[in-house]
Structures are given as structure tokens and as C-alpha cells.
Image 1: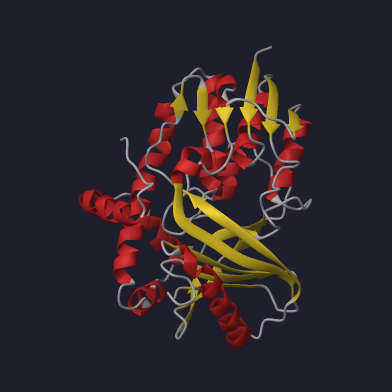
Image 2: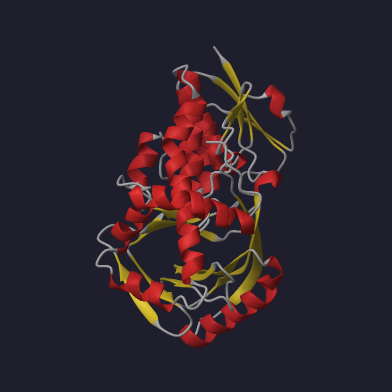
Length: 358
């Protein structure tokens, strides 16, 4: 039996581990943390459903991942610029709401259980060199960290199920804030790009907005924080080590979504071992244009926000199907190809950790 070593017991590493174990490989996973999902605080995140025509749940099934964790579809959401408010609708789910962290219902713990059931050996509180493993899934690489942070609170509430996105530079500089509530469990968070020193004031303004506009009841609150790791310098493989998820910089730069890419890259890394294929080529074919499109989208969004986000919000609101519109933004069309050189140059001037190798 062939043996494989994986560094990192997050969703990308576990995705690889599950697929390898199901094919009869002896798999050992090493992680410095005490448990899968420990870096998260129980916050909600969106498993995006717009970057591909294939529904993400079907994609997970094809990647041999079962839904044994909370995963709630949302086909509508609200969006505001701090003044106007619009409801966005879609025929299919825009995203699936999942919980991150060490709670049993989280995606992290669900995938850990699947890995253990498949026979994977997970070693927590353990260290291993990247040079001695086959797959590196260690999360954000310090070399790729953008000037981007998030701050939020997790809380109990009597509010009905709700998802609202907020774009306003006083509440989320060059980023966005959101309110998510599901079954009495809530999350309010602010994501700030570039000027990270504004995170405190932006979050305070966000919290005040959601409380005054929606009357959010908050109890048993605790804080949540995070960072974004992104790069176009995708050395997906160095020597024997295949890099997956945020360790490979797979986090799109417009809204910071990365779970779908994390799980997908873990699956591709496993496939490259099982089928003896070139992982660098597989990953570049799968993710390169998606990541390039996100750079162009970030450039367009920041240009739109130089004066006022209101016109951009109103354009979104006019869409009959918001998922379909967002899908178009990630196809890397002829327009994206034409704009990419300028967009890359302008975006890198603000976020210099972004580099490009292909």
C-alpha cells in the first residue's frame, strides 16, 4: 500500500486525504492545531455557488465529499450601500451557508469525521517539514497575505433567517460587511481591504447600522477575526509537495471566497497522485482564469467605489438572476483578458504581495 503525508487538517487537506484513503492509500495528516477548524470562531461563511455552472453541492459529491455538516442554501439576500436597500433573487442557490470551527455541525468537523471513517490517521499538535510531505494544506502563506482583515461577532438572536451584504467605505473600507442569521445563530462581520487600521471603526459603524436598520437582537456574543491570503504566484508544486487551498494562494480577491477552491484543489492533488498526473497543470487549468478574473473584478469594483457604490448596487439589483450575473463576472471573458494587464498592475500597486508567474 502506498503512503501519503499531508500537512494541514483543514478542508483542503482533508479533501485530499479522503480521496486518497478511499483509493486504498495509507494517509497521515499532521496539524499544529489541536483540532480541525480551530482557527475559526464558529462564524458563518458562504460556500459560493456562482463561479461554475455546476452546483457546488454536485461538485462536492463528485469530489467524494458528503454533506454531513450544516449546509443551508440561500437563493435570496439583501444588499445595501448604507442608504438604499435591495433584495437580490436567484433561481438557484447563490451560496450555501456553512459554519466554521470546532462545533460538530461545522464543515471542518464534518470533513474530519469523513476522513477518519475512510481510515485517515490525523495527528494533531504535530509538526512536519514541508519537504517531507506530499501535500501542503497549511492555510494562508505569510508571503501571500494581503492588506486585508476581518472582524466580527458571533451571537444568539431572535431574528429570523437573514443574509444582508453592506458596501460602504465607512463601514467596510474597499470591502464589505454582512449580517447572517440562521436558526437563531447570528454573525456580523466587516472585511476591510488595504487600510487595515480602519477595521475597528468600520466594525463599530457596521454594528450600529445593522442594529438600527434591522433591529438585531444580540446576546451571548463573542468575537471573530481573520485574514485573507491571495496570490497569482501559483507554484502549485515544489519538488514532491503539492500546495492546496490558501497555502497555494487560492482565495479570490474581490470578496475573499475560497472554500470551494480549497476543497477542489485538495481533490485535484489527490487525483494527481492516484492517476500519476501533473498537479501543476491540473491546478492551473482549473483555477488560473478564475483567479485572474477576480483581479479584474477587484479593479472594477474599486474604481466603481471611488465616488459612490450606489450605481453598482443598483445594477446588481436590476438583475433578474443575481447568480447568473455573478457567474458572468468569473468566466474570464474577452473583456477580462483585455483589462487584465492594467487591472493586475493597478491592483498590485495597492496589494504588492500579489505576484504573477503565469
